[in-house]
Length: 487
Image 1 (cartoon, rainbow, N blue to C red):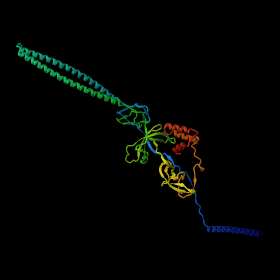
Image 2: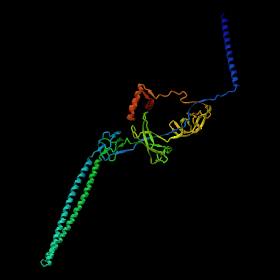
Image 3: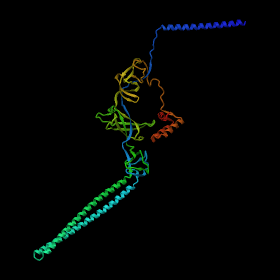
Image 4: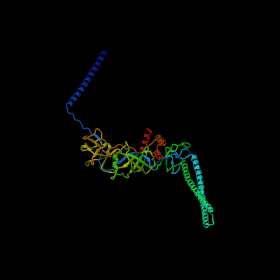
C-alpha cells in the first residue's frame, strides 16, 4: 500500500510540472508573436518640448552706471620730519598711529640745550657789538671835535701870520717874526690834516662796528630759529600715521617721524577705460561735474558717501591705459586714506533701449525670441552696456512687446518648441526672507566675531551689534559675517 501511495504522489508531481512548463512555453510564444507583429509596423518619434523662462521686451530710457574700483587718499598729507638732531624730551599726548591733533599743537620737543647755548652766545656777541658801535660813534664825535679845534687853531695862526706880514710891510715888524708866524700856520694846517685822518679812521671803525652789529643780529636771529626748530608743531588738524619715534629716542635732522593726514579732505582716485572716458566727455571735451557714489564694503553693512567728480590725471604713465579720475568726498564719516572702495558714476541717459538679463545674450549678440506655436527664433541686437547681471541693448523696433528667453542653454536654439514660464504668472518658488531669527549660540558667535574685528570702524561695529541683538536679523548681514568667519 505504501508503494502505491508513493507512486501516485510522484505521478501527480510529474503531471503538475509538465503543466507549468507548458503554460510558460505558451506565454513566451505569445510574447514573441506580439513582438514580431510590432516589428512589422512603422514607428513615429514625438517632438521634445523644453521649458524656458521668458521676459517681455520693453523699450525705455536707461541711465547706465559706470562701476570702477579705487583708493581713498587725502588731498593734504604732510611728512613730519625732525627739524633738528638730538634727544626727544617730550611727546604730545596722542602722538601715535591714529592720534588726532589740532592745528598748531606741539607734537614733540627735542633737547634744546645746545641751541639755547648758541642763542645765549649770539645774544652776548650782539651786546658786545652794540658796545663797540657806541664806542666807535663816540670816537667819531671826539675826532670831529678835534678837527674843529685844529681848524680853529689853524685859522688863528693864519691871522697871526697876516698880522706879522702887515707889520713887516709898514716897517714895524721883522722878517724873522713873519717866518715864525708862517711856520706856526703851516704846523696848524698839518695838525688839521692829521685830525681829519683820525676822523676818517674813526668813521671807518664806526662803519665796521655797524656791520659787525648787523652780523650779530643775523646770528641771533639764526640762533632763535634753530632754538624754535627744537619744537615740532602741526601745520593743520589731522590724524597721525607711520609714527616711528619714542620719547627719549635719538633722531637725526630731517628724519621722518610721522605722517600727518587731513582726514576731512579725502578724495577717491579710480581708473576707467578710454572707451568709458569718451562716453563721459561733454561736447567741448571737458568732464562733467557728475555726482559719484562711493561704497566701502563693511561686512554687509556698506558705508556709502556722496562725492563729486573734480579732475583727471595730466598724463598716462608708461605701462598703463585708460584715464585716472579723481572725485572729492563730500562726506568722510567712516572712510580712511587707503580704503579700497567701489565707485559708481552715472553716465548720460540712453533712449529707446532694452534692459535684459545678461544670460539672455550669447557671444554673437543674439537673443531667442518666442515666436508662433511657442517656437524660438533668433534676433540680432546691439550690446551697449553691461550692468552687473543685466545688459543694455538696442533692439529692432519689431521686437517691441515680444518675449525673449531669459537664460540660454545648449539645448535651446532656433526652431525649438518650448513651454514658456513667465515670472509673476507661473508658480514660483517662495521668496527668500529678508530677516531670520537666530538661536542664542549662533547669535553669540556672530556678536563675538564682530566685537573682536579691529578692521571695522567704531560706528559701523556699533550698528552691526545693534542689529545682531534684534529678534529678526537681516539675512544679508548674517550671510556676510559667516562667510568671513569661514562657515
